[in-house]
Image 1 (cartoon, rainbow, N blue to C red):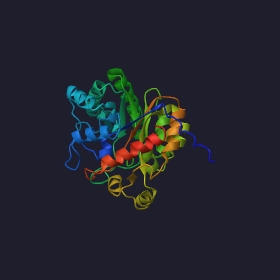
Image 2 (cartoon, rainbow, N blue to C red):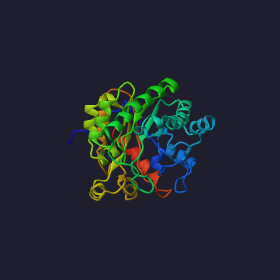
Image 3 (cartoon, helix red, strand yellow):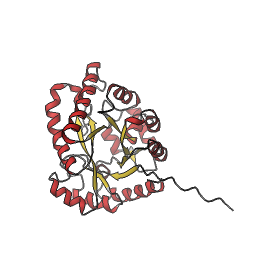
Image 4 (tube, helix red, strand yellow):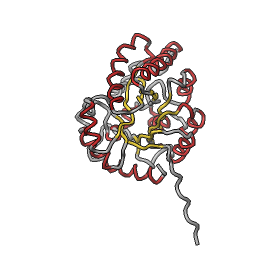
Length: 306
Protein backbone atom coordinates (compact mmCIF):
# COMPACT_ATOMS: atom_id res chain seq x y z
CA UNK A 1 0.00 0.00 0.00
CA UNK A 2 1.49 3.32 -1.03
CA UNK A 3 1.34 6.44 1.12
CA UNK A 4 -0.98 9.23 0.02
CA UNK A 5 0.71 12.07 -1.82
CA UNK A 6 1.39 15.15 0.29
CA UNK A 7 -0.95 18.03 -0.46
CA UNK A 8 0.55 20.94 -2.37
CA UNK A 9 1.06 23.87 0.04
CA UNK A 10 -1.29 26.75 -0.66
CA UNK A 11 0.54 29.85 -1.85
CA UNK A 12 -2.01 32.15 -0.24
CA UNK A 13 0.18 35.27 -0.43
CA UNK A 14 0.68 34.95 -4.22
CA UNK A 15 -1.81 36.49 -6.67
CA UNK A 16 -1.32 35.08 -10.17
CA UNK A 17 -2.03 37.05 -13.34
CA UNK A 18 -0.88 37.45 -16.92
CA UNK A 19 0.02 40.26 -19.27
CA UNK A 20 -0.10 41.35 -22.93
CA UNK A 21 3.52 40.20 -23.20
CA UNK A 22 2.32 36.59 -23.03
CA UNK A 23 0.27 37.31 -26.16
CA UNK A 24 3.29 38.60 -28.09
CA UNK A 25 2.60 42.28 -27.35
CA UNK A 26 5.65 44.54 -27.07
CA UNK A 27 4.40 47.77 -28.64
CA UNK A 28 1.33 50.02 -28.39
CA UNK A 29 0.45 49.41 -32.03
CA UNK A 30 1.98 46.75 -34.24
CA UNK A 31 0.53 44.74 -37.12
CA UNK A 32 2.19 41.56 -35.83
CA UNK A 33 0.29 41.70 -32.52
CA UNK A 34 -3.18 40.41 -31.63
CA UNK A 35 -5.92 43.04 -31.17
CA UNK A 36 -6.42 44.07 -27.57
CA UNK A 37 -9.98 42.69 -27.53
CA UNK A 38 -8.65 39.23 -28.32
CA UNK A 39 -6.04 39.49 -25.56
CA UNK A 40 -8.69 40.42 -22.98
CA UNK A 41 -11.07 37.68 -24.14
CA UNK A 42 -8.40 35.00 -24.09
CA UNK A 43 -6.63 35.97 -20.87
CA UNK A 44 -9.98 35.74 -19.06
CA UNK A 45 -10.90 32.46 -20.73
CA UNK A 46 -7.50 31.00 -19.78
CA UNK A 47 -8.39 31.47 -16.10
CA UNK A 48 -6.56 34.62 -15.07
CA UNK A 49 -8.16 37.40 -13.01
CA UNK A 50 -5.27 39.90 -12.86
CA UNK A 51 -3.60 41.63 -15.82
CA UNK A 52 -1.04 44.34 -16.48
CA UNK A 53 -1.70 47.23 -18.83
CA UNK A 54 1.21 46.38 -21.11
CA UNK A 55 2.71 49.10 -23.33
CA UNK A 56 0.74 52.31 -22.86
CA UNK A 57 -1.73 52.67 -25.71
CA UNK A 58 -2.22 48.97 -26.43
CA UNK A 59 -5.28 48.74 -24.19
CA UNK A 60 -7.78 51.63 -24.24
CA UNK A 61 -6.40 54.64 -22.36
CA UNK A 62 -9.81 56.11 -21.53
CA UNK A 63 -10.41 54.95 -17.93
CA UNK A 64 -14.18 54.60 -18.31
CA UNK A 65 -13.88 52.44 -21.42
CA UNK A 66 -11.08 50.31 -20.02
CA UNK A 67 -13.00 49.81 -16.77
CA UNK A 68 -16.02 48.63 -18.73
CA UNK A 69 -13.95 46.26 -20.86
CA UNK A 70 -12.13 44.58 -17.99
CA UNK A 71 -15.11 44.50 -15.61
CA UNK A 72 -17.32 42.57 -17.99
CA UNK A 73 -14.54 40.00 -18.32
CA UNK A 74 -14.00 39.81 -14.53
CA UNK A 75 -10.45 41.13 -14.83
CA UNK A 76 -8.55 43.51 -12.55
CA UNK A 77 -5.38 45.49 -13.28
CA UNK A 78 -2.33 44.83 -11.10
CA UNK A 79 0.13 47.36 -12.58
CA UNK A 80 1.12 49.70 -15.35
CA UNK A 81 4.51 49.66 -17.09
CA UNK A 82 6.85 52.58 -17.71
CA UNK A 83 10.18 52.91 -19.49
CA UNK A 84 12.99 55.14 -18.21
CA UNK A 85 16.49 56.34 -19.10
CA UNK A 86 17.32 57.97 -15.77
CA UNK A 87 21.02 57.09 -15.99
CA UNK A 88 21.27 59.90 -18.55
CA UNK A 89 20.90 62.52 -15.84
CA UNK A 90 18.48 65.21 -14.63
CA UNK A 91 17.99 66.64 -18.12
CA UNK A 92 15.90 63.55 -19.01
CA UNK A 93 13.49 64.08 -16.13
CA UNK A 94 10.82 66.19 -17.85
CA UNK A 95 10.44 63.81 -20.79
CA UNK A 96 10.41 60.85 -18.40
CA UNK A 97 7.74 62.41 -16.21
CA UNK A 98 5.51 63.16 -19.20
CA UNK A 99 5.45 59.44 -20.00
CA UNK A 100 5.20 58.37 -16.36
CA UNK A 101 2.29 60.68 -15.56
CA UNK A 102 0.19 59.28 -18.43
CA UNK A 103 0.68 55.70 -17.33
CA UNK A 104 0.35 56.52 -13.62
CA UNK A 105 -2.97 58.29 -14.13
CA UNK A 106 -4.45 55.30 -15.94
CA UNK A 107 -2.95 52.86 -13.44
CA UNK A 108 -4.45 54.77 -10.51
CA UNK A 109 -7.81 54.98 -12.29
CA UNK A 110 -7.78 51.17 -12.52
CA UNK A 111 -7.20 50.97 -8.73
CA UNK A 112 -3.83 49.27 -9.23
CA UNK A 113 -0.98 50.05 -6.86
CA UNK A 114 2.23 49.38 -8.83
CA UNK A 115 4.25 50.78 -11.69
CA UNK A 116 6.71 48.34 -13.22
CA UNK A 117 9.78 50.34 -14.28
CA UNK A 118 11.88 48.98 -17.16
CA UNK A 119 15.28 50.65 -17.70
CA UNK A 120 16.10 51.66 -21.26
CA UNK A 121 17.85 49.16 -23.50
CA UNK A 122 21.45 49.71 -24.57
CA UNK A 123 20.53 47.76 -27.73
CA UNK A 124 17.58 48.69 -29.93
CA UNK A 125 14.76 46.22 -29.25
CA UNK A 126 13.80 45.95 -32.95
CA UNK A 127 17.08 46.31 -34.86
CA UNK A 128 19.49 45.04 -32.15
CA UNK A 129 21.76 48.02 -32.94
CA UNK A 130 24.00 48.99 -30.00
CA UNK A 131 22.87 52.50 -29.10
CA UNK A 132 25.00 53.16 -26.00
CA UNK A 133 27.69 51.40 -23.93
CA UNK A 134 26.43 48.34 -22.03
CA UNK A 135 28.28 49.41 -18.86
CA UNK A 136 27.49 52.56 -16.88
CA UNK A 137 30.06 54.99 -15.55
CA UNK A 138 30.13 55.82 -11.84
CA UNK A 139 28.37 59.11 -12.60
CA UNK A 140 25.66 57.32 -14.57
CA UNK A 141 25.11 54.92 -11.67
CA UNK A 142 24.57 57.93 -9.40
CA UNK A 143 22.11 59.43 -11.87
CA UNK A 144 20.28 56.09 -12.07
CA UNK A 145 19.96 55.57 -8.32
CA UNK A 146 19.05 59.15 -7.42
CA UNK A 147 16.68 59.37 -10.38
CA UNK A 148 14.87 56.18 -9.35
CA UNK A 149 14.54 57.44 -5.79
CA UNK A 150 13.06 60.70 -7.06
CA UNK A 151 10.72 58.73 -9.31
CA UNK A 152 9.59 56.54 -6.42
CA UNK A 153 8.97 59.54 -4.20
CA UNK A 154 7.04 61.59 -6.76
CA UNK A 155 4.97 58.68 -8.05
CA UNK A 156 3.92 57.86 -4.48
CA UNK A 157 3.20 61.48 -3.52
CA UNK A 158 1.25 62.35 -6.67
CA UNK A 159 -0.45 59.05 -7.52
CA UNK A 160 -0.25 56.80 -4.46
CA UNK A 161 1.62 54.13 -6.43
CA UNK A 162 4.78 52.16 -5.67
CA UNK A 163 7.48 51.62 -8.27
CA UNK A 164 9.07 48.19 -8.79
CA UNK A 165 12.15 48.17 -11.00
CA UNK A 166 12.43 45.31 -13.50
CA UNK A 167 15.92 43.84 -14.15
CA UNK A 168 15.91 43.14 -17.88
CA UNK A 169 18.19 41.65 -20.51
CA UNK A 170 20.11 44.20 -22.60
CA UNK A 171 19.65 46.91 -19.95
CA UNK A 172 22.04 48.20 -17.31
CA UNK A 173 20.13 46.48 -14.49
CA UNK A 174 20.43 42.84 -15.48
CA UNK A 175 22.33 40.13 -13.56
CA UNK A 176 23.35 39.55 -9.96
CA UNK A 177 26.18 42.09 -9.77
CA UNK A 178 24.26 45.02 -11.23
CA UNK A 179 21.03 44.21 -9.41
CA UNK A 180 22.86 44.08 -6.07
CA UNK A 181 24.67 47.33 -6.87
CA UNK A 182 21.36 49.00 -7.74
CA UNK A 183 19.59 47.77 -4.61
CA UNK A 184 22.48 48.75 -2.36
CA UNK A 185 22.47 52.27 -3.85
CA UNK A 186 18.74 52.94 -3.44
CA UNK A 187 16.38 53.57 -0.52
CA UNK A 188 14.17 50.56 0.20
CA UNK A 189 11.33 52.87 1.23
CA UNK A 190 11.22 54.37 -2.27
CA UNK A 191 12.52 51.73 -4.70
CA UNK A 192 11.86 48.01 -4.80
CA UNK A 193 12.19 45.25 -7.36
CA UNK A 194 10.02 43.47 -9.87
CA UNK A 195 11.88 40.17 -10.04
CA UNK A 196 11.42 38.65 -13.48
CA UNK A 197 12.58 35.08 -13.07
CA UNK A 198 13.22 34.60 -16.79
CA UNK A 199 15.22 37.76 -17.36
CA UNK A 200 17.22 37.14 -14.20
CA UNK A 201 18.07 33.59 -15.31
CA UNK A 202 18.84 34.88 -18.83
CA UNK A 203 21.44 37.17 -17.21
CA UNK A 204 22.88 34.42 -15.00
CA UNK A 205 21.04 35.19 -11.78
CA UNK A 206 19.53 32.88 -9.16
CA UNK A 207 15.99 34.01 -8.28
CA UNK A 208 15.70 32.00 -5.05
CA UNK A 209 19.01 33.38 -3.83
CA UNK A 210 17.88 36.93 -4.63
CA UNK A 211 14.60 36.46 -2.75
CA UNK A 212 16.42 34.99 0.26
CA UNK A 213 19.08 37.72 0.24
CA UNK A 214 17.01 40.81 -0.59
CA UNK A 215 13.55 39.62 0.43
CA UNK A 216 12.46 42.98 1.79
CA UNK A 217 13.15 44.53 -1.63
CA UNK A 218 10.98 42.12 -3.64
CA UNK A 219 7.77 43.98 -4.35
CA UNK A 220 6.42 42.13 -7.40
CA UNK A 221 7.13 39.05 -9.52
CA UNK A 222 7.11 38.18 -13.19
CA UNK A 223 7.03 34.42 -13.74
CA UNK A 224 9.00 33.37 -16.78
CA UNK A 225 11.38 30.61 -17.87
CA UNK A 226 14.26 30.33 -20.32
CA UNK A 227 15.24 27.38 -22.49
CA UNK A 228 18.76 26.51 -21.22
CA UNK A 229 19.97 25.07 -24.54
CA UNK A 230 18.91 28.10 -26.56
CA UNK A 231 20.25 30.40 -23.84
CA UNK A 232 23.67 28.71 -23.95
CA UNK A 233 23.89 29.43 -27.67
CA UNK A 234 22.63 33.00 -27.18
CA UNK A 235 25.32 33.67 -24.56
CA UNK A 236 28.06 31.94 -26.57
CA UNK A 237 27.35 33.98 -29.68
CA UNK A 238 26.34 37.29 -28.08
CA UNK A 239 22.85 37.19 -29.59
CA UNK A 240 20.77 40.30 -28.79
CA UNK A 241 17.57 39.87 -26.79
CA UNK A 242 15.11 40.49 -29.63
CA UNK A 243 16.57 37.84 -31.94
CA UNK A 244 16.94 35.50 -28.94
CA UNK A 245 13.21 35.78 -28.30
CA UNK A 246 12.53 34.91 -31.94
CA UNK A 247 14.61 31.77 -31.39
CA UNK A 248 12.35 30.79 -28.48
CA UNK A 249 14.71 31.54 -25.60
CA UNK A 250 11.72 32.29 -23.35
CA UNK A 251 9.77 29.06 -23.08
CA UNK A 252 6.57 27.64 -21.68
CA UNK A 253 6.66 26.50 -18.03
CA UNK A 254 7.66 24.02 -16.76
CA UNK A 255 9.98 23.26 -19.70
CA UNK A 256 12.75 25.71 -18.76
CA UNK A 257 14.64 27.31 -15.89
CA UNK A 258 14.42 28.40 -13.18
CA UNK A 259 12.09 25.88 -11.60
CA UNK A 260 9.13 27.96 -10.48
CA UNK A 261 8.09 25.85 -7.47
CA UNK A 262 11.13 26.87 -5.36
CA UNK A 263 10.76 30.50 -6.46
CA UNK A 264 7.11 30.58 -5.40
CA UNK A 265 7.91 28.82 -2.13
CA UNK A 266 10.63 31.37 -1.33
CA UNK A 267 8.27 34.22 -2.18
CA UNK A 268 5.54 32.73 0.03
CA UNK A 269 8.00 32.64 2.97
CA UNK A 270 8.33 36.43 2.75
CA UNK A 271 4.81 36.53 4.20
CA UNK A 272 3.71 39.53 2.16
CA UNK A 273 1.11 39.75 -0.59
CA UNK A 274 2.81 39.59 -3.98
CA UNK A 275 1.58 39.65 -7.54
CA UNK A 276 3.10 36.94 -9.73
CA UNK A 277 2.39 37.90 -13.33
CA UNK A 278 3.05 35.29 -16.01
CA UNK A 279 5.01 36.51 -18.99
CA UNK A 280 6.45 34.62 -21.93
CA UNK A 281 8.19 36.85 -24.44
CA UNK A 282 7.06 35.65 -27.86
CA UNK A 283 7.23 38.70 -30.12
CA UNK A 284 6.29 38.12 -32.85
CA UNK A 285 4.13 35.01 -32.71
CA UNK A 286 1.21 33.47 -34.60
CA UNK A 287 -2.10 34.77 -33.18
CA UNK A 288 -3.32 31.29 -32.29
CA UNK A 289 -0.19 30.39 -30.28
CA UNK A 290 -0.63 32.26 -26.94
CA UNK A 291 -4.00 31.01 -25.71
CA UNK A 292 -3.27 27.27 -25.33
CA UNK A 293 0.06 28.09 -23.68
CA UNK A 294 -1.72 30.44 -21.27
CA UNK A 295 -4.24 27.73 -20.35
CA UNK A 296 -1.52 25.13 -19.75
CA UNK A 297 0.57 27.56 -17.73
CA UNK A 298 -2.40 28.44 -15.51
CA UNK A 299 -3.03 24.74 -14.85
CA UNK A 300 0.64 24.23 -14.05
CA UNK A 301 0.66 27.09 -11.55
CA UNK A 302 -2.46 25.73 -9.88
CA UNK A 303 -0.63 22.42 -9.48
CA UNK A 304 2.08 24.39 -7.65
CA UNK A 305 -0.50 25.79 -5.23
CA UNK A 306 -0.81 29.22 -6.83
